[in-house]
Image (cartoon, rainbow, N blue to C red; front, side, top):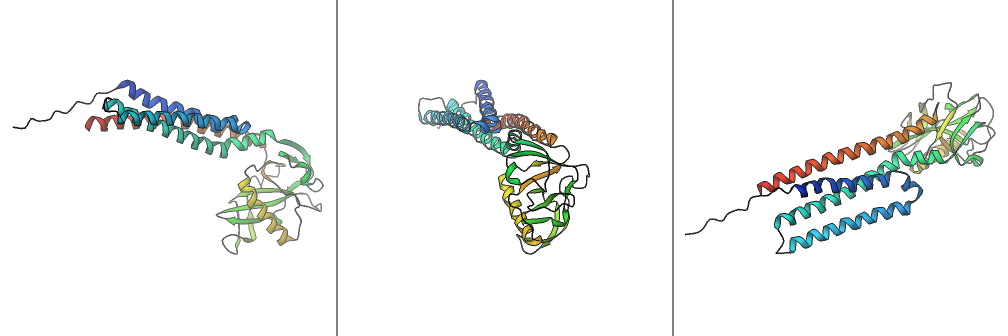
Length: 294
């Protein structure tokens, strides 16, 4: 007569549950902050030193968990929770580094770039060469300056990169070095998937506000390259020169727009911190339910 095997009841380990929730969350918060804020901008070497130090911590946790699972003397429940904790810490590290890098690229880096560059008041676009103000972050132009939408152009590559020169009234300009720009805010006649010939309307920034005399420099290098291609098309189409083109978002208050980058960066950081905590709490509860039934 065979003897029925008894199954060991699942024991809830509250210490392991708390560790599984809070340790990955702390790692996420630190990595998210390091990759998002000023340490990433001012000292990339220190930033990535932190990243690799925490990666080493995660690697140690994973090795400890694997060794515990191979030890026949170890408690199976403890080994299981060790693996879960190590896996959650690896997830926290990866999510923190990725989310922080995205937050830095889209919000904080433009803010730090704009805050560290110079501000130039009363610039005459018909007289000032762009080469003399290459370090401009914000710029205000002399009264009478406007957008010359008759010389607007666009370059299409997935998105439409729109440009229009900033001029001083009817003054003849030797080199059009200052351009108002925008993304997907103009319409044109497409020759193929990459070029636009002719422009029906330029509607970027505060183009229709006659009080606007200032701009905030475009900080993202990946966008500037396509704006340069649009300017080259404008040079060819309108027989003009743009020796050292600089690109600006045409707006009334660049200071507020620059501060908005900082606000967005902190908003996404706080949202990410709470969202990841909620995710870890949900994930651990799911683990407890699965383990209690297995």
